[in-house]
Length: 451
Ligand SMILES: [Zn+2]
Image 1 (cartoon, rainbow, N blue to C red):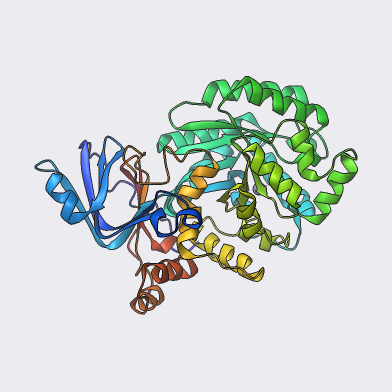
Image 2 (cartoon, rainbow, N blue to C red; image 1 turned 90 degrees about the vertical axis):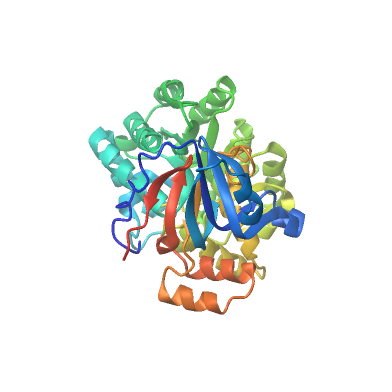
């Protein structure tokens, strides 16, 4: 993470309760998928104005058109020279693994045993959970991420901690208690019935409270009994609107283990399908070692994939096939997957997404990349009617990007002629230093401290 504690400026603008505010700068947002709509998918205003009223987008357009419509006395924040975009959407991340980012030497199954389970065991302590949750949320905002789908740990207190930390900043968060009742140490293990009861209580406590949503969270098939997986389906059936998050087909050793544990299954994905866990609002991280049948099932069911390139490279798991996923019609979002991933920055994640896709002989176009990190991610979570765009009445979660944040970035931008070239340089060279400010529901929650 570049820079120091980047939350220093959180209070800038605090206390401003004006109902209407306008932000002038270069504006970019998406109204659809560039792969489908081409140039009609994005809206770009070199000199634009974003108008926010009561935490929602009131207008976004060219300055010459919008400024004359503003009520007399409207405060106009001048971000000319900077790029205003919707906040990033991280569709897969583990807040409890913040402290094991950059842990050496293991692939998935050994990495879980050696680093993850010991780190997650500490979240039985609510004070530890609260301290990490607060730091993690601060880091998300410093990186321009305003919505995240988050794994807690198997301890209910860990869920309370992350929801409380998100709620304190009015963030849109989806999170849940990890369910795992076998093949893990006792310190992080639950039982099928106990996990069900805890999940139900947490849904009642948090789901739909403010901007928070609950996700039923079986870690992955090898650490849940068939009874537990069946109860996950029951939780979803009993609570419409609740999400599901899990992992599938990340690592070849894991895939082989699932085949041993569930000998009746056609594939790893088929295990989840069997228990009714493929559906809308179900988000599966990785999806690397899938076949065409699996991809088709995901698309038909309405489930979504989370592409986690830094994690897949760091843990040596494999290369996600973005063109195959897109070709099957399945929804795809982008995930940092901390702590298997190596950065909470969605810009760093896009850099690796580009390389992974390039390895397979394809290119991830810059506009498609920024769609993936914003509206595409929102659509994968079925939240695209609320976030991810500056269409009127969307929740005003936005970021202000400084395309001259570092000397090298500034120098490269001088040579970039088109919007696509500038976005590409930003995603290849940018990181949290390029996030000048982050707003949630129209309120500033992070401003980058001057270097
Ligand atoms: Zn993960």
